Picture (cartoon, rainbow, N blue to C red):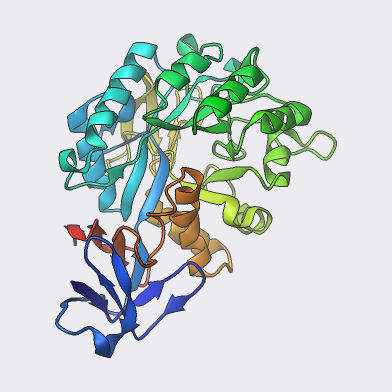
Length: 379
């Protein structure tokens, strides 16, 4: 048994002080600091004791990319993002060929077994961002690999895909959404889409329950045609992703979106292989991207993912809103866990859940990452 003391414990609805968090492989409970018995003591040094963060939309990190299909690359990413407080994630593919997608899926299948990835963030499955998107809203996706909606491909890989993006206005998309949601537990996200409001609503009625990086690569909110943004904001059945890097979305909107979506808002990174590296030229989906500061762009200026770290997304929302920290942390832990159906074991420091815990300083910089009760990173 281990006990974390001298920390501010972040729970879904409050932050506790003067208490100790007890855990082994699972969370055992919270007790007064004077009642930890002979447990091994971990000193939080006055910082925060937070549930591990869950990034359900991240393509790459430290020079690696999910779509490469490299087991070594995925392990490198898993260990790297654990240093940012991420304890679980969905390696995210791009619009690439079916052969490349299958290789990536196979690699994640193998590494989702904890014994094959003991030192890094746990892989909970795959987020397939495409290839069933609208070419007019492709963003940094490769147009030559865009395909018509294909329910069979999704169903064949439904053991590993947890979330996928589709443009609901494209031919065959609604039938695909209906078939996949009837036959699997896959979560359907609308994104890279030129749908109008009515087409987006039709997608939601067919089974869409998620919106890929809200505002980006979708029709905007207009007072006469609310677009995909309006449909996603207005419908409580739809959870929305937000890239809170202050570049993809104005920081002035963070609080407004949070007010509208509440616990249906999820912080993601949409990070590329340039994450954690210096400015320069990298690739995304086979295309060169140019990285300068927090900006990643194609040669023509199109925004191409990010270099955001998920703990910094929490910091950014905290810096630009008056939201309580426990609500912001939920956006990066419990809310994504709910979205992909793992909230019974992930996403909060509640008794019986996996002991996925991070210790941070007062500025939410990660000092230690614990996954399944074992420390995988310590600063």
